[in-house]
Image 1: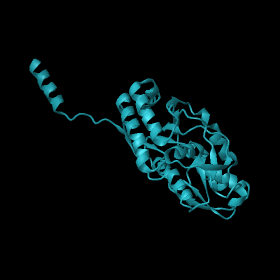
Image 2 (image 1 turned 120 degrees about the vertical axis):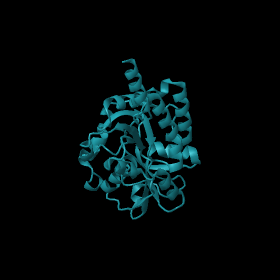
Image 3 (image 1 turned 60 degrees about the vertical axis):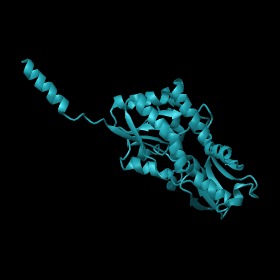
Image 4 (image 1 turned 60 degrees about the horizontal axis):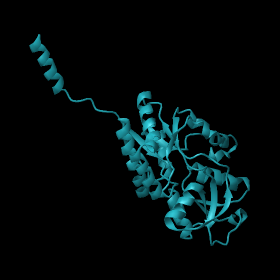
Length: 276
């Protein structure tokens, strides 16, 4: 019997180890891809280590790419505000956290030295936006222009940095933007803006998980994200990331059950058809 037991043990050692499931995490790309990767890679590595759940970063070139990844079922975790329309709510993705930052506003901005001082002066002009999926920067701001019957020509820059570059190069007269990213770009690049319009406040993007992920793995990842602020290593990573992209130093992750995103859902109840 002892010999049989030893043979069985040896056989089990010879079997290949069961591969650990690897999940893909895709955050909305709000900055240029190099800056975005530099911000997220240390966070993803930390969460993987602390949770024991392997995550890999899947970063798109444009802000719309994240939504394309979700719709194609190519990712299991996301940092996004693109999934709160009635149709996408039905996909079953759940909010488990958010970044604890001041309220965001959609803003229509021009360079501080621009001769444009009102929305009415944008009539017929080219206006920059990051992309058609950008809720704060595009949907809220373009809805305001439609409501005021101001006809503009939309120009998509791929992400918020791209739209800002078009503004300061003179390619567009104004930009639909996210207030957090306006402030961050101003800090990083030393640029100044004039705000022509502000939307109602919205919470920052949500950490979300696909219904395909087992509850145990989802809970471990959530705990790692929300625990970063209580861990010296986690705080150091968050502080470095905040400095890199111009966020407040206290921009850490907190738990959420998703109720804070009701204003997003209300928007879709009255939004123009082309923005739903």
